[in-house]
Image (cartoon, rainbow, N blue to C red; front, side):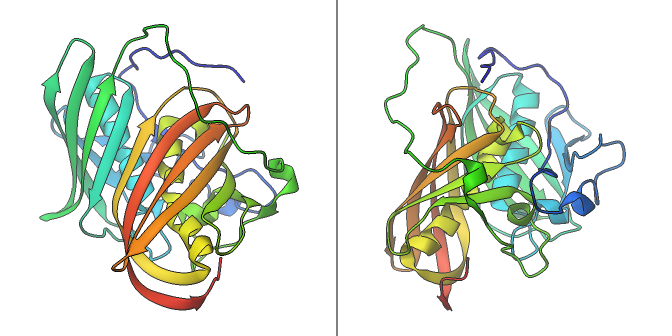
Length: 298
């Protein structure tokens, strides 16, 4: 797989597109609620606001979670796009704190603040709001430089190839959500065990893009359902993603490790690898579990 440059990004339109490929007939959803002027199959499109630091995002079914509200990973991916476009630097780290929901059909505003701008690193924040309600806040670091010492220590686990893995079924009642629209395969899971593996693909090679990795890292609660061997309802409290090597890969392997549930709050982490075993991202997440719904259902 070809590697991409690690330098500063260009200030250009950033859109996240989701997969219409794979064995599931998903093409009926592609572009269904795309903003006017969006290119084919691109369903997340930031619009420039009235200031260079202001952006707007329309919440569509393709960006929704199972409850019909903005999927946390997709929201954080949109914030990442706004941060990169505002600063002109590549994202290294982003962490979101989720405070409220935005339903499908809502238009949310994303405001970026550059807090500290150095020669190589920018530290910045983004606030996503719907009217007077803050949906989430994000903190981020962007930039860096090449010291010729880049390396990784973890190695990807051995799992079956994506084409040999079962397809993950719908996870929402409507069948129209980000996780339903992505092509996700069950690469290895044993109810009750801490480690769960998913292959995931979006349109083209976008699963390995910055926005794709951030959105897909939000599968961690799905892995914890398997580890707990029970279904549950809940909502994310935070979602942090660290972006590492850049490598183009049509499929990414998401390795989820559930750590603990204490006082109704679950905690876990994830590593995301390319098909060649390159470590692309690290993620952590905490989420509040509101109720146990019964036996494992996904």
